[in-house]
Image 1 (cartoon, rainbow, N blue to C red):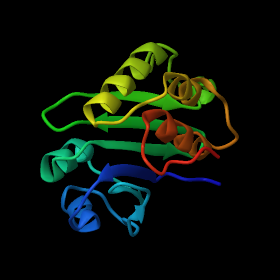
Image 2: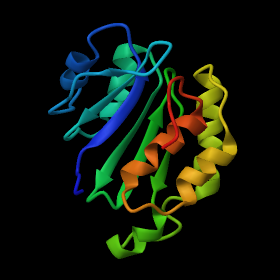
Image 3: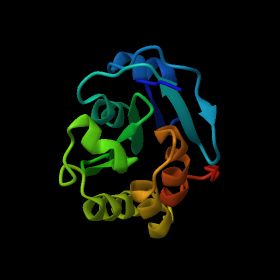
Image 4: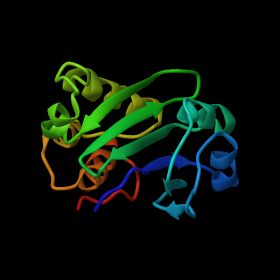
Length: 159
């Protein structure tokens, strides 16, 4: 399972796929409904600052992950009006990609995720978020649902 694309979750009432393509995402799949207006979309590639551009266009919170060979998942989240955070899924493999342990510290990612959840009107679970950023999985894609559940995304299911 080698993947260099990613996945994005947001709330949207309009043409999410078209909006994503307009701000730099490519090869965007159809949006899959989760619950309460939240959608998940897979994509092949994205431009620099695409998540923030999507937030500005839609006015909705965004959390996305881009995968590196299914080994690592680079998480980026943004909120309307500013604010966001980053994190790393499957950090055990980071050193094999010359990424130091201090580049994606867990504490700030967990704190950022909690603030993001609250600002998005969700009830997060810090233990699940921490689990997503500290556990090892054969494929980083297996940890994104854990993060979504930890963020309190409606309809997100643990694997």
